[in-house]
Structures are given as structure tokens and as C-alpha cells.
Length: 199
Ligand code: URA
Ligand code: SF4
Image 1 (cartoon, rainbow, N blue to C red):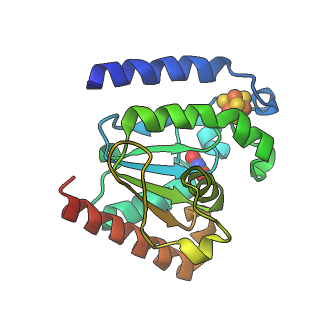
Image 2: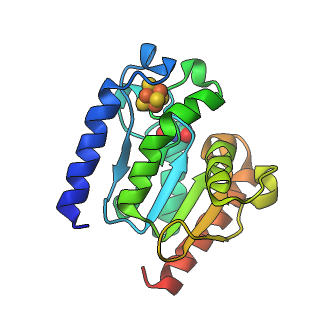
């Protein structure tokens, strides 16, 4: 699929998400957040759901967790516009509460279509919700983010291999230096893989 077709398909998704009422979160959201970055990206990052600033700006990871993520990406020479970044849920849950299973079930079709358009070589799951979602899609048992973060999992979502690298969520690392280091290690691994895979 060429770049223009992908951009048009993402635009179509944005139109659908703007009108979406498939779960109750449309009632309290200001703006849905589809995703951001390059449609040609070989790396996709998946977070949990928009927070306060994302809901206001309509863009993913623009608040304090996003700033921390940017800092870690920069340290590893990964640019925001070389990747694509999105969330499991496209609308902000009130008070940033955890996503509910029925909300994830209602919203996941959008994430699936994004992934299918971009078909990344590497998927970085940020936090337990996106990790649990991607693991379940791949048929890999998931217990806790601590057990799996910083490792590489090979999955076959499309015709070629995709590598999944789970990480702690940057929001959890805002006041926790140890978690910040762990995220740094996971992203460093992604940077190395990118070099090795020549992507
Ligand atoms: N946390 C997320 O999971 N996603 C965002 O877009 C922002 C904060
Ligand atoms: Fe629709 Fe997803 Fe928003 Fe729910 S969270 S209203 S399913 S776009």
C-alpha cells in the first residue's frame, strides 16, 4: 500500500473516531486521539489512553508522560516523526482511570486497522494495558508487565515477523528513577534492533 493510500485510510479512521459512540467515553472526551507520526514508520508505540493534555490537544503523548518519553527517545536517537504512536483507547477515560474491558473491546478495531495499515516491524507496548492487548492478540500468556518488559517477543501478525518489546509506561516512571532506567533500557534495545534490522 503506498503512502498516500495509507494517509487517506488514516484520515477515514479519524473521521470515524470523531463520530464514534461505540463506548461511553465519547460523552466526556473533548477530542479523540487517533495517533500521530509517520505512516511509513517501522516502529509503532502503543500507550494506554489519552490523558488530560492529549484530550485537549487531540494528540498522543503531549503531557508529562509524553515529555519523558520524548526525552528517552532522544537519548536513543529515535525521532518522534520516524515512529508512529497511538493508544489502545482513543478517548480519555474520566480522571485517567484504567480502561475497562468493554471499552477496549469497543475501541480495538481502530487500533487493529492502524496496525494493519502500517504493519510495523517493531511494536513497543507502553504499560500493562497495551501489552496485555498485544500479547492476547499473539496468543502469548500475560501475567505482569514486570515479567515481560525489556524483552523481545517474536510474533506473526502479517506475512513477516514482527518484534514486540513491552516497556513500563512512562507515566509510571515520572517519579520513579528505577522505572525510568528500565524504560531507557527497553528503548535502547529498540534502537539497537532498528540498527540490526536495517529499518
Ligand atoms: N498516556 C498514554 O497512555 N497515552 C497518552 O497518549 C498519554 C499518556
Ligand atoms: Fe469510540 Fe474508542 Fe472513543 Fe469509545 S474510546 S467512543 S470506542 S473511539
